[in-house]
Length: 437
Image (cartoon, rainbow, N blue to C red; front, side, top):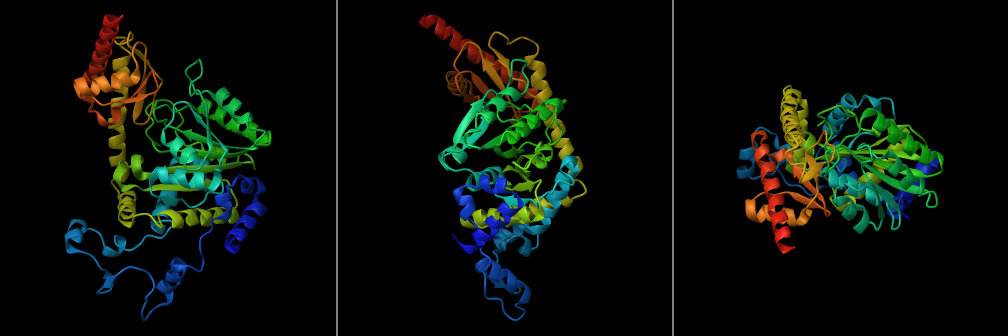
C-alpha cells in the first residue's frame, strides 16, 4: 500500500474507526499523489515567476492558447476561466458558492461538520465515487423497488455489490419506513449497508413528508445502534422541485451527526436543479465528521477523480459559478420551478377526474420531473411500444405494470392530450386482447 494511502487510512481510523470499516478495498488503497504532476504544477504556479514549464497546456501572449472560432462564441468569458484545467476537486470559487447555496437551502446542515463540496462530472459520477470508495463485492446496497436503473450499473455491475429492494410505498401510500427498517436490520450479519435515498424520487416523483423523513432517520439510527455501519447517501438530483407539502430539505442534515456508525454523503448538482443537464456539473459533500476526517475523505475522493476523469470540465463550472453569482439567479430559477409545479398540478388534476380509472391508478407524487402510472389491464412494455409506433408518444416502461411519464418535458397545455393518447393506447390493446381471447 502506498504510504500516502496508509496515512489517510490512519487518520480516518483514528477519527472514526466505523467509517474506516465502511471503506472498500479500493477506498483503502486510493490516495491523491502529493508529489505527482498536479501537485508539482500547483507549486510551480505560485513560485515559477520566470518560466513555468510544468503542466500540459499551451500559452500564447500570457493567456491559454485557443482557437478564435471557439472563443468568438464565448467572448463574455476570460480564456483563463475556460481553457485551463480545473483542479481535481473543482473550481475553488464554485465549491465555495455551492456550499453557501447548500447551507441556505438546508439549514439543518449548519454546524454539522460539513465538508467543502467536491465537483463531480454530474450526479452519476458522484454516485460512482461513492461506489468506488465504499462498495465491495457482496456488500449490500438498499434501495426502494422504484429506483433509477443506473444504481444497478454503478453499484452492482461495476462494483459487484448486491442491491436489496424494498417497496417504496406502504399500504397507506406513504414512504415504507418499515420496509427500509427490515432491509437494514437484516444486515447485522454483514455489519455494513449502503442506503440510497433519492428524493424527489426517480421514477415516481415522490418526496416523503416531514414526519416520514423523521421515520427514515429513526430507522437508520436504529440500525446503527444495532451495530451496522451505514453509508447513508442522499441522491438529491431533483432537489428544490417540491410542489406540495413534503420535506423541503435534504435528509443529509439530519443524518450528519446521527450516530458514529452513520456516514452522511450528499450527492447533488446543477444538472437538474439549475436546468443545465448538458453541463455535467455535480457535487459530492461529506457531512457530520471532524476536520481531519473530512480532509482525508476529500483526498481519497480526489484520488478517485484523478484516476478516472482527472478533473471535470472547466467551462461548465465557470458557467454555473456565473449563474450562482448573478443577481437574477434566484428569480429566474423560481420562475422555472413554478412552470414545473404548474405541470405537476395539471397532471394531478387530469388524473383525479376519474376519467382514466379503468386503465390505471397513479403512484403518489408531489415533486421532481416524473410521475408513474400503475396499469391495470395491459403490459407496460407492450403499451410503450404501441404508443411509440402508433401515436408517436414516448414513455418509459418499468416492469410489467409501471409506466413513467416525464411531465417535465411536456407543455402544460399538451398534458391533457398526452394522457388521452395514453388511454387510447390502453384501449387499443384491450381490444386486441379481447379479440385474441
